[in-house]
Length: 409
View 1 (cartoon, rainbow, N blue to C red):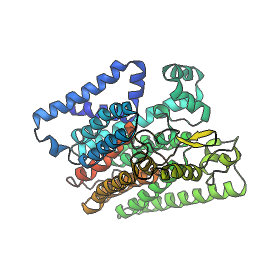
View 2 (view 1 turned 180 degrees about the vertical axis):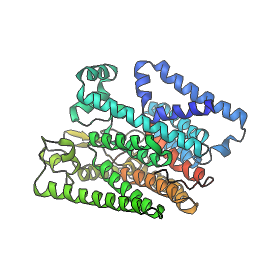
View 3 (view 1 turned 60 degrees about the vertical axis):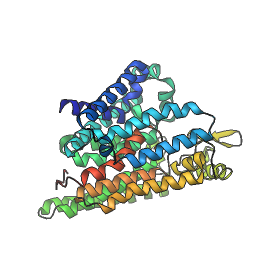
View 4 (view 1 turned 90 degrees about the vertical axis):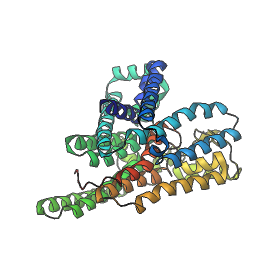
């Protein structure tokens, strides 16, 4: 059991992107983590020879990622990207189903990632408020933390505000599986971290997920009138808050100097971006699509769309759309294969039988993935993205075997 707990802890460390911290201190520490993960897989293989059966939940997505990497490398001149990504992707997508094999493992992992979000929140706040700590982090990884200071969007060790927002949303969904005090601590930390990232997509998805769980809570709790009243009041408060914020922004205009985070979050039309001469999400998608349509059949190869790669005049901008990234890198047939394999994973949520809590959790996870995939390209090859995709494919298979009616609210 101690061995299993340690393996889950390693997976949670990767989720929290502590790998960045370890690799910045010493590459030996990074390779040490990979070595421990490989030892864990070997131990499992020796004890349970049916290895392929154990990883079959994530096998479809793993095979697609291998197809994506190989085809993208053949098209691209940057072969080194293929080599650097291949090992980590295979390791993660095999590690997830081997380590999380029952509900106890799921609960244990859920608790760990609450702490990952909390510690990342502490790092984000220190980066925001403590100049001494800023200097320490900048000395460890200058490029990674300097962008957070320059944009005033703090994301902790995740660095990218979009990744931090997604990680926070995942932790909120998982908090309903672990429940208890740590669940509430994690939820509060995640909401604060989403605020610090000033992420619009993450905030809107947060409101959507909370609304789903409020409805679910009302349907689960039938015998306690007080609980029903509390949920109704919470739902009304949530709706009222959304209306007031929208009215406040459109009628009175939030002063950007008073709270830049709130101002950015409620700026639905991205007017501040337009005023600064920047590019909105619509602009980014339009220019990205234009580049994709110049080579629609086979794309430009691996790594060609995942950085600032679309030239507009004298500037170069990123695509911020996972589907356009796949299309632009491995062509239209690659995009169709991507949509198909995601359909295979999503289908499991609807053909298997789950209790209501599990069903809502799985649907919420897929909502986060699919909606955020239109606003970010971070799910393709990032460590967090691979863990997330592994969980999306693995959890339906895991939870259909163990139907425990526990609200964990």
